[in-house]
Structure formats: structure tokens, C-alpha cells
View (cartoon, rainbow, N blue to C red):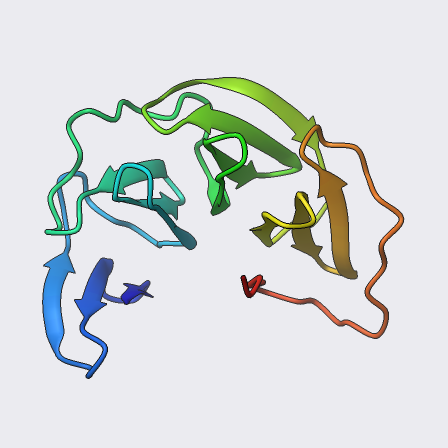
Length: 162
């Protein structure tokens, strides 16, 4: 299990019994982590921060095979779409899709203003984006869905149970 430690500017890995196993602190420096997602295809942990997105191996070292995620500064969250094998980064009112190796976005779509978090449901093939007034749903191509989540006030994170 990985835990983002925003005040300590690090990530901490723990065993299932709660024993600390790895601390990821730099290379590049982790400042204000905003999201985490694990890609089981390449065993990388992707971390979104105010500076962008970085990839790490399970031992805590930066993955040298992953280049910068161009245009993903001020990342608010990150999620993985196993159906497309792409990393999706929420930044501002944009969600951009990247190859797991980073580089330039392969596609992007616009989401509601005030977005704070993103999650992907691989079974429904939908992205869920939290914003100041609730949660909005989008298809894999970015089409807004009519799904609504009433009675929410400023949700800050989302998880989809698989």
C-alpha cells in the first residue's frame, strides 16, 4: 500500500501488516502529491503533484523509461485505464491521456470547472470527476454522461471498487 504524505513531501509504502517498507522522497522531488495510481502492466506507481506526474518502481526509484508528461503541470489527480493502457491526468478543466511512458498527450477532453479528483471504472468504462458541486461522469472518449450523484458537497476524492 502506498500513502501520499503531502506535508512530508513523500510517499510511504507499507506492507499489509502496516510495516513501513519504502519511502519515496526525491528524484524528482515530490511536492504536494495530489493523486496515486498503480499500473499493473508495467508495475509503475504514478504520482500526480503540483509540478506534474512522475513514475516510480516498487522499490521507490524513479522509472528512467518514463519521460515527462508534457502539459500535465498542476496535476490534480491521476488514474489508469487498463482498457486503453493509458494514464489519465486531471489538470484544471482538462483530462489528458498519456502512454504509460509519458511524453505528449495522445488525447484530452474538457471537464467541469472546479475539478478536484478523478477515478476510472474499468467495467462501466467511465471516468468520474469530482468537482465543487458533485461528481460528473465521462466516457473513455470524454463524452459527458447523464449520471448524477445528488446531495454531495465538495467531494475531494473518489475510489472505484473493482
